[in-house]
Length: 136
Image 1 (cartoon, helix red, strand yellow):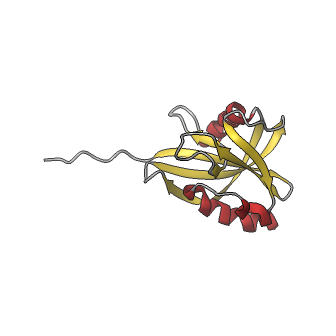
Image 2 (image 1 turned 90 degrees about the horizontal axis):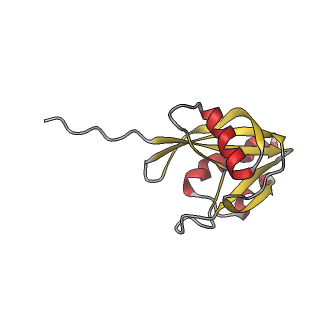
């Protein structure tokens, strides 16, 4: 008998939006078990879009901004108990100022401030990679 293959993890993308040596962090408003934890804005990659297209769409929906997607930050990160594969990319604002439409709060964080918020565990390795890259 063939065992059913486990579903591959859903790819989700996060935008490390830069402004100088600072990066934008967003506090989750929901679900209740994640509310108050911080992440990089972004979301699920839909079947008909690239990772960059997903980031651009998600930032428009969540923050009301247009971004230019840059290089990857770190490697693939497993999150959500292995249900998701997180890929974080640098991004730069090209239009608009970020507003918290779906998040409880937004903050611009300098490298020394990255530990001032409680990050989602799946985002923590990207935060560590960012710390060095933002100082460069």
